[in-house]
Amino acid sequence: MKAIFLPLLAGLVLSAGAARGAEPPPAPPVLPVVVVEYLQYTNGAITDFDRLDLALRDVARERHWPVTIAAERFAANTAARETELRIFPRRLREEFRLDLTFRGWVILTVKGVKHDFGIVTATYYPYPGESTDTAIDKAFRRAALAIADKVEPILFPPAAPAPP
Image (cartoon, rainbow, N blue to C red; front, top):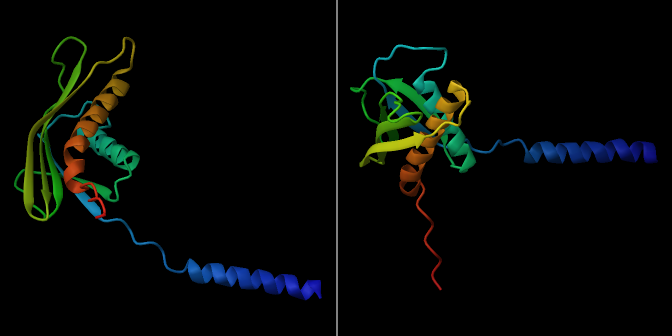
C-alpha cells in the first residue's frame, strides 16, 4: 500500500507545484539610460561608459529599484524617449592633487516631463597605494550614487500615507 501511495503523493505535489509555477513573474520595466559621451581615446579595455553603466546597475540593485537599467551609448542628437535618464559625462578629472572628480549633466525625463539636474559632481579621494582601476571604479560609484540621489525621488516618489 505504501509503495503505491508514495509515488502518487509525489506526483500530486509535483503537478501542483508545476501548475503554480507555470506563469513566470512579470519582468520589471526597463529604464533606458542614455550616456551621451565625448569622443574619447581608450586607455584600456574598460571605458568610462562601461564603468558608469556598471556603477548605475549596482546602485539600482542595492536600492531595490523596481526597474532594469538598460544603458546605451549615443550621440547627442538621438531622439528622446518618453521615460529615460540622459547623462552627458565629462572626462574623469584630477582637480586637486590625488582626487578624482566626475562631472556630468543629468536630465531625467518621466512620461514626457523633463527634470534637468544640471551638472552633478562627485569626488573620490583615493587611499595611498590604492590601484588606479579601483580608484576609478570607486569614483564612478560615487557618481552613480550622486545621480541616484537626484533621480530616485522623482522616479519612485514616496507612497502617500493612508487616510485615517
